[in-house]
Length: 438
Image (cartoon, rainbow, N blue to C red; front, side, top):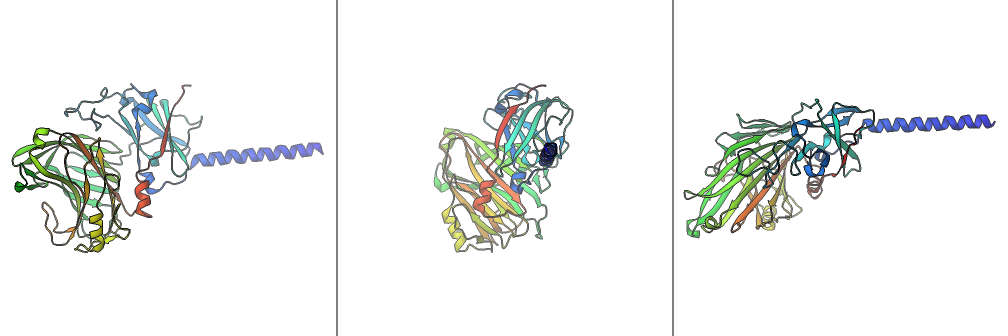
């Protein structure tokens, strides 16, 4: 009898062990699906957080993850940065931080969260030497992993962002954007995949500088015709493409400001990063300067718009400003609370944020127009339906001044804007561990 009991116990233990192993293998083979927002978040790992790879030649490094229980190469890039905190471009006026082509503390490793996989097991072999494990602890309670390698011959050929400098054309699986060859702040075409409207949904990006020279009686407005941005370099990668633009603001034939503008194109977003050093002598010539950046929609009647500080009820684009839209304009925006969300209800939502770079903070306000007849050149389509964005109400007296405007694109954000605007800016916690040799 004791022998029978022992055999039953051993058999049960074996079954439990087998089931545990099966469960372990099953959990390794698949992960809980990410939300659409989380899936396309670009994860940036600072070089200083990967000490095991510092000093290595960038072209010897690559990234892999366990996908469907197999170690696979995944899309990635490593961008080098300049001493001003922007992406480095050879030949530009700002020197590189560190050594070129070598992984330094200020460089960044970029990949998409959706390409992270399950944790590597001993049997997951791969070409090259494992350097570091990067763990992503997400808001869904799941930890995902990617692995940095050295001297691997395997690379992913996936390109989430495709760019042609010759054509001034950016393409992703979600949008395409064609820039005017003579001026990259002018759009020739913007196409959204799966958009159900009949026309091109966006007219143009509009930059405006309003200022007087010495006196407020000589106030003038500079628009995209006078604000000319010439490409000075491209950094093309599978995760994002960055274009360096040389932009000069001329006022009454006087070159008032030299601006470094970088446009970052991601799979589902575009970020405009503007940095300048304002000379005190030139700044004294400007009276009551304001600078604005906004998107002009093309006939997006029926679009609902909400802002961070505005009423809970959405404004409706109908060609004239209604009471709710008046409240949005009066509520304005702040450096902390400034999201703008527009839903066309035609498989296109647009979400924007504004951020100051550095320590300088100036008052900002919401730029918003809803007018079916108003002409605001340069534009391809008559009307501001709607025109929405941000206005910086003053420029500092001197020194560094910078800001970034982020534009996110979706076929439809889910839930309340208070929730998804927070989710889109909340990154998973990162933990980087050196992989021991052996």
